[in-house]
Image (tube, rainbow, N blue to C red; front, top):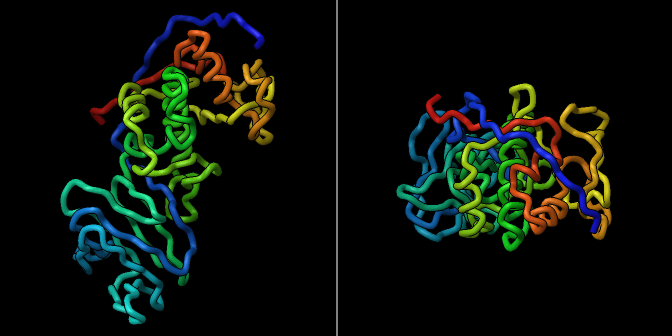
Length: 288
């Protein structure tokens, strides 16, 4: 493997005025004919418009929601039970999880009837969202410093791209069009610890949080061009993953490269400052 001496400046942490507990909306399903939902403890469906409970949910029981003209109904035993709303929130009554797509999620589920199809959104605090991203984007068994780098890059990407999918009513998708997100079902104690240890840390350039693109591997050299845009913090650098070939777009941090650098003793901050040039670290201010 090619070895390169990485020389970095002094690590500085600035303060960015954004709340790390900010809720982010993640699109789980878009324009579907029906959806199965549930809670692991007693819960309730609440109309977005009236804030009134339209249905209570039993623990570990599944409910099928379908469009019913311009509203939403529960489908059971061949019958429809109207909920008299076109948008609802499912939440547990006590600390617990919500379910859809065969997975468990932290936070709440929002279901909307838009044009006769359903959109399902996970409304969740940012840090809880990241607990479902890190193990979905990088194997939890990889080097700890690589996982920390992944957490910081993922947090930066999420905040820099809030509202990217606003045409659907949410911020980001749960797949690699944005970031892979497996909810609480994907979490591990190791990757949760990584998120907690890096809480609120983001990458910035010129005091703005960067869209920290990353890929599985770049095949030897990263791509400095992000889909036609020349970003000042992206330069073509040796990616430390030439044995893997190119997997993905090759822009920004190579995940395999980050893992290989961590094996050589580099920490998360050095890894990130190598793949993203002239960036600074910032800590989100939790007092706003």
